[in-house]
Length: 123
Ligand SMILES: [Zn+2]
Image 1 (cartoon, rainbow, N blue to C red):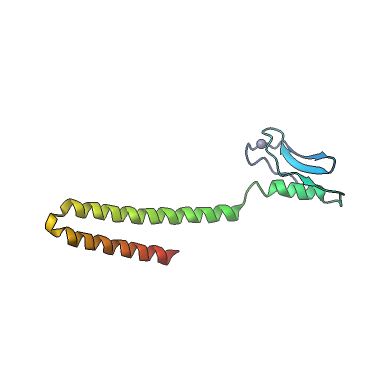
Image 2: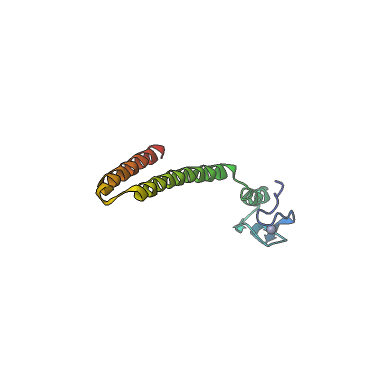
């Protein structure tokens, strides 16, 4: 039978396969976190492996974590680009006089277009 990994919520190793008639699930005896309950009409010999897999696959999914970390990196990069746009805009606003306002607005919109195109290129 597959070895049960520690509880993903509290880290306890005090986890076990619970059986109640036809119902099987894995539960942490420390925090009571559990898998879904599965019903088996008959045990073909691999029932406990199936519920152990339910528990073990919940512990750690490196592919999912890697994907989420990549999304966070992209969002941080995107945010820093827009922070730069805001800084440039604030700088231009500080220097602008009413007569130059329309040219500042044009350069601001050009910046937005550039950032937007770069963002779309990345995704
Ligand atoms: Zn636990």
